[in-house]
Structure formats: C-alpha cells, structure tokens
Amino acid sequence: MAREDQEVNIVTTRFGLIHADETDVIRIPEGLVGFRNATLFVLFPDPESASLYWLQSVTSPELAFGLVAPPIALDDYQVELRPADRSALELDDEREALTYLILNRTESGVLTVNLQGPLVFNPVRRLGRQLVLTSSRHAVRFPLERDLSEPRIGVLQGPSSLRATA
Image (cartoon, rainbow, N blue to C red; front, side, top):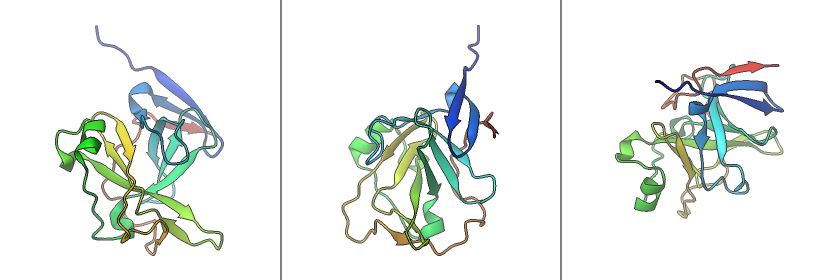
C-alpha cells in the first residue's frame, strides 16, 4: 500500500498560511548561524521576483530568509565541499548539490549577499547545511548588483503543492 504524503500547514508572518506536503520539508540538522534551533524549512520561489527564493521556517512563523543562486551575485563563485559536508548532506556526487546565498538588506537599503555562509542542499534527500567559509576573499556583505527579475538559475524545486493563503 502506497503511503500518502501528510500535509503540513505552516503559519508565517510574511506569507500567511502555507500548505505543503511533508516530503517538501527540508531538514537543516545543524540549523543556521544565529538560528541553531530552527531545523525544518520549506523553500519556494518568490511570486514576484524571478531570481528570489524564500527559505521559510516550519516552526518559527517570523523566520524566513531570502535566497539567490550564486551566479546572480558573482559569476565565478564556487564552493568546495569538504568530506564532512558531503557526509552530512548524504551526497554521493558533489555535482548534485545546489548552492544558495542568503540575501540581506543594509540599513541604507542596499541588497547584499553573504558569500562566507552559503547554504548547500541535497535536493534528493531534502537536506541542507550552512557552510562557514574562512577565506578572506569572500565578503559577508557582497553588494548585489543584478536585477532579481532575471531568469531563475540552478533551482531546487520547492514544494509541489505549496499554497499560500493570506
């Protein structure tokens, strides 16, 4: 007998009530820097900005992060996964990993991305991990100069049945 997916209702302060399948939930076992207790998320595209995604906490209504694919910020940005990262993500092939950068807005309104703390996902296992890069060549607040309405790049498929109700 096939198991039916359980629906998860996610209360959010930014998007209202979101309905997703249990299989759409992404686990980030170690949480994110500054938010270690938040480990369950859904990832979905912004309805208005073609290159913007949202990583919404399943358990904290106010916790949502804007994300962009690295080429939106920097054409040659690459992350090398350490063996411990590959193991934590249960990745057999590093090429299957998808990387995103957390978007920030400065007090003056400038959009920046965090190049030192990328998020890496295994889309098959629905696992994520935030890396902390120590290279000084990567800025924590790298100015985003591209328009977020550009086409989507390197997409981790979001919840198939995602429905938001305001």
